[in-house]
Amino acid sequence: MKMGIFYGSSTGNTEVAAEKIKEQMGEFVPDEIVDVRNASPEQLLEYDLLFLGVSTWNIGDMQDDWDEFLPRLEEIDLTGKKVALFSMGDQDGYPYNFLDAMGELWEMCKARGASLVGVWPTEGYRFDESRALHDEEHFVGLGLDEDNESELTDDRIRDWLLKVVEELGFDVSAAAE
Ligand SMILES: Cc1cc2nc3c(=O)[nH]c(=O)nc-3n(C[C@H](O)[C@H](O)[C@H](O)COP(=O)(O)O)c2cc1C
Image 1 (tube, rainbow, N blue to C red):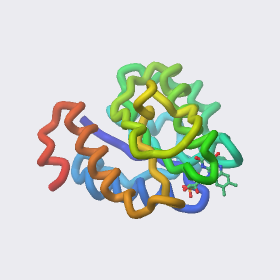
Image 2 (cartoon, helix red, strand yellow; image 1 turned 60 degrees about the vertical axis):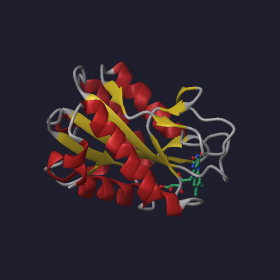
Image 3 (cartoon, helix red, strand yellow; image 1 turned 60 degrees about the horizontal axis):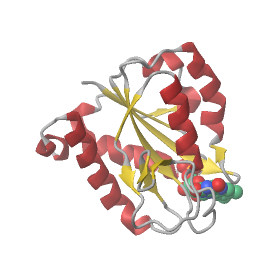
Image 4 (cartoon, rainbow, N blue to C red; image 1 turned 30 degrees about the vertical axis):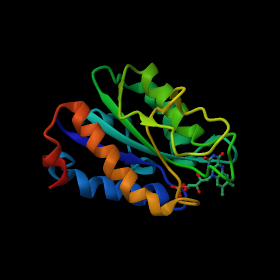
């Protein structure tokens, strides 16, 4: 299974998370991480599993580069592709829109036929509303908050990746090497 990492990041936080995921996934992610600003929709089709990273801006808005890229998703069919989402937000500053863009990104991928891996518990986060909910107790992907809980980021990424890899049916120890 070939995995690729695509991200959009306005101040670099999601980019750093993408780098950490690449580092931890080792040989599962053979290529460099890709900024969606420089990506083509066809590039997504090179992979079986897509790690997609996004941040939320301007009270519930999609990060700028994803916002430009998303209409172009109409050009491709993601049937048979798996998507694992990771996302930066600010739960204290924007408790009614925490991680909204991740929910929107998933809706777009779902509409193009993708399936989801790596839903993540909402337990331990404080927020009032989010469009990124999968169900009452889970986000559609990993929630990260570099503004308020940067000390938790590394553990969250590690634990989430172990869960993703397990869901995919791989030997967990292989990912950590
Ligand atoms: C003007 C502004 C608006 C923001 N709006 C939201 C929001 O609606 N929801 C949210 O969860 N985070 C929001 N954030 C927080 C960012 O998503 C957060 O700082 C993130 O780490 C930025 O990641 P990036 O550098 O990868 O773009 C906002 C930040 C700023 C400065």
